Image (cartoon, rainbow, N blue to C red; front, side, top):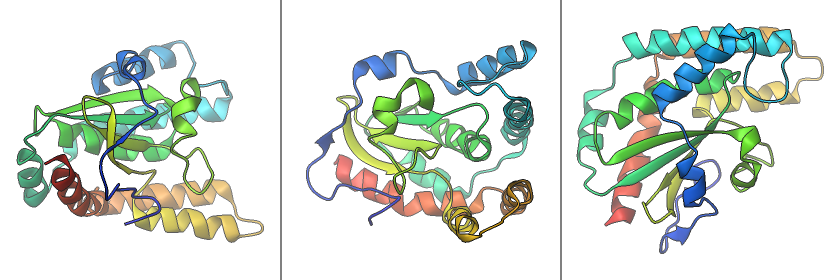
Length: 216
């Protein structure tokens, strides 16, 4: 597979990611606490502290906490996750205001809970542009972006920034001359609500197969 889902078919390649990036990365729980604290201060992550970004962050905080309680993984995906028998680091580029991140990172967190071999870590995009610019999507700094690594910082594969149906929605919207962005955002969030993370889980199944094979 190519494009959004990069899977090295040859030997694992050393990533630009270094131990220093992992050392300053957050757990999912720490990310939630960071968002909570920032919102108490009427702030968000990143340089853009506009009212719109603050509102997105508030919505995302509620979305993530709701998904933490309601999200259910498909049995086949759980079985696949439990079969991973080598240590992986899942490093995710994100920001608190990102709607796609709020919908997909809780799914990644639930996946990582299924196997102690998966170490999920989050870093903020705008504080780690050296990493972000090595993992662009169609030339853009789109997030969330998951990079699967060995403990030696060798790249196994990537996923992101969003499930394929939403990615296509984004591409279609960019072709519109006078599209209403707010209407588009609401359309995307409605899709996520109806999909219940099933598309993302289905996309992960072949990726996990490829990553497991590559880890042997």
